[in-house]
Amino acid sequence: MASAEILTIGTEILLGEILDTNTRYLSHKLREQGIDLYRQTTVGDNIKRIAQAIQHSLPETDIIITTGGLGPTVDDPTRQAIAEAVSVEIEFRTELWDQIQERYRRYGRTPTENNKRQAFVPQGAIAVENPVGTAPAFIVETQDCAIIALPGVPHEMKHLMENTIIPYLHQRLNLDSVIKTRIIHTAGVGESQIDDRIGDLETFSNPTVGLAAHSGQVDVRITAKGRTDEEADLLIRSIEHELRERLGEWIYGADKETLEQAALNNIQSIGWNLAVIEAGLRGELIHRLAGAEGPFMGGEALTNQLSEDELFDMVEAYRDERSVEAVFGVSIHPGKERQKVYLALATPEEKAVYPVYYGGPPGYTIRWAVNQCLDLIRKY
Image (tube, rainbow, N blue to C red; front, top):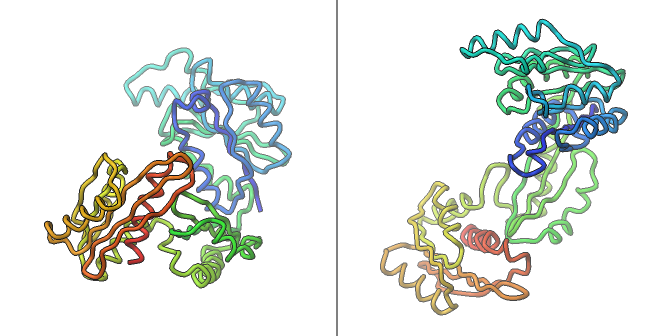
């Protein structure tokens, strides 16, 4: 199985000034081609450090993809850094300069002298024309590895990846497999409880099974490798069936399915409509339910805390006054060591309020409380 590393270049990324979306995109594309992603690294605009990162990776991976640092300014170091990493000079390519000038003419502009920097590539590199931007890409091949330098501008990088680089990878690596992933979502249960039930599945090599805990929910990731989509899908289905057998009602959906949609689907299946009262959640519960499809009638978002009795009375009164079949409420009470959260409900079948407790980081309390309420609605 071929392996790859992504090297994102840009001091602005290290400083948190811009969000790196290129790595996520490239990770998905590599996975789709059946290429294992070995490592993701971010390096600032420093020739020496970029060259060192590349030299470190050369003996360990088949493909290194860099993004960024191909612009015309003095702080665009990727060309020189790659050349130093493989011990060659950079050279001027007339055909690249012609392409750059033509691109500027299309934009009704004239390139400046520093744009000529973009026509330089490491000696022996394979030049890659960029039809949607001014920065040409290039590929440097060594005996065991290919270094692919792509622009950092997302739409340029994506165009080149899909139209030039992926075909190149298939030809160079004789790719004959795919990697596919499916995410199973659970709620109302902790990571350790899930691990206790499926720990043996987490030792498999293909498909692999892994856990990712969030506030109030846990995702189970299934990743399968196969020669075809159908083969990988078959492997995933087998594990998913086993997961559903073992985890039961803890599972609320998969991939893009959301907890709020599962909650509204349940209320709709009962034949009710729904409203919510939230206190101290900054409108997050209402916002998530409003983004799903189903019988959601809105509600009230309060900034003050509600005691157990106040929450119960308000949920009951809201149901009676608004002719809503089901009203659920939630109120957060911060504490020093743990947060107390009151959950309340008023439906044609039941009226109740009870406390639950959250001992995680205080900053995650709102998300946890929202997920607790949505899970209660889903399971009602």
